[in-house]
Image (tube, rainbow, N blue to C red; front, side, top):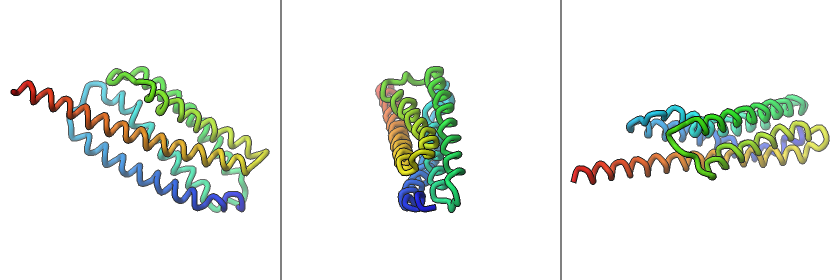
Length: 181
């Protein structure tokens, strides 16, 4: 399909990055799991860690969809619509989980990267499905932008989670050392 063929390299690169980052997240979570488990950590995980994997999976899914040998754009745009609407619904759930969890008090940056920007990305993907009926070229660019946004959101959130765990553990360790002295 000519419009999708021009995007092959983009989606191969972005999809490979998403796949690698999913694997890296599993490694990081495994390493963090060796430490003590805080009360309500499961709530925080479903609010902060799981969405990161979901965003990387969305990028990987769209990369697979965009590089598949379709004969028509109808299945592609249907998947955009489903993923966009599903992502919007999921982000609503994430916002509720962020409010309900009690382990960590989210700050503006958390709301921005865990709810607002993902909402924008998933709305853009859903809108692309409808725009594709009018202008496929613009719809492809909007979807590509949303995919990059989800990838960068995932990278930011993964980094933020790792640094949070490293520094909170370091602070706890330093408190224990001071008490021992």
